[in-house]
Length: 351
Image 1 (cartoon, rainbow, N blue to C red):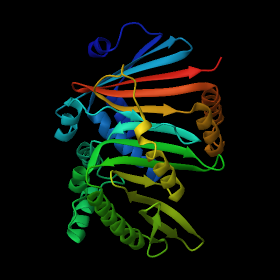
Image 2 (tube, rainbow, N blue to C red; image 1 turned 120 degrees about the horizontal axis):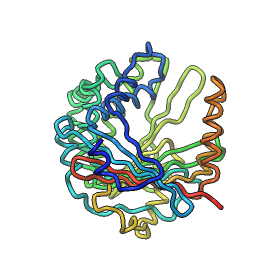
Image 3 (cartoon, rainbow, N blue to C red; image 1 turned 180 degrees about the vertical axis):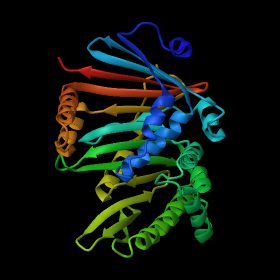
Image 4 (spheres, rainbow, N blue to C red; image 1 turned 45 degrees about the vertical axis):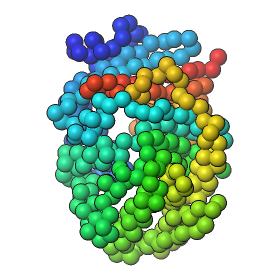
């Protein structure tokens, strides 16, 4: 507790702390496999992260029409992979930039540092800490890809990607449609493309084998704006769906949920010289900046939230949606300190 209060700024309307060990035990409870795979993956990440956390505290304050939340998470260097510990202790360069102007319908935008070596090391830690989880065979799969293609996905991606990346969640033609695109700086775009092509080939064979041909992914490559779009379509007994796609430019790797998402990413790159640096008052060790359009997120959630189950679940979901609908801006900044990660979020309201 003393560490929590020492790291947090004084004051605050609300101050509190989280017991990492208790939360980890709660998330680790067996549910007899009833959780979806996506939830299981999130649970695996959470439990692995909680094992490396020594303490976590937060404070909340009301300031000038908004709510400020500050969080400090103390980490245990003895548990962290050395690549992660090195990334936390380093002073990142160069500065983060925010894409401008943002595409119409942008729901979420994030500017972040890629840190590919640290990300891979973290993934492997997740696997080691959750031997029954959905990612338990990740290390075996990476070795299999290297044996088949001669490409080491972790090493080759780490060596080919640059320092910065951007992620955008985009609203579609209707509130039910949402697309995502990631733009990553690339030191060696050709090497990055070859690595992803090896991953795509392995994944197609893996899915066909696991589903006994019930799901048949197939390669769909085509020209787009002078580049080669590398895509996948997914054929089932009932329909053929467009799958994720990527392309490599001279300086970037663009990955999207579909062709439309990639087009949005390429249009954004055309304005790269006009992108604005993140506010100078952010710490020099900032690793991510996030902006969320509250009303757009509320409309999207309203379309996807299924109002069945307990009545208290309805009330909670409705309250969150109503709160988001009246916000004018939601931002979060994340930065590193020695053996710690800090987060500062701000929610602004209309009127």
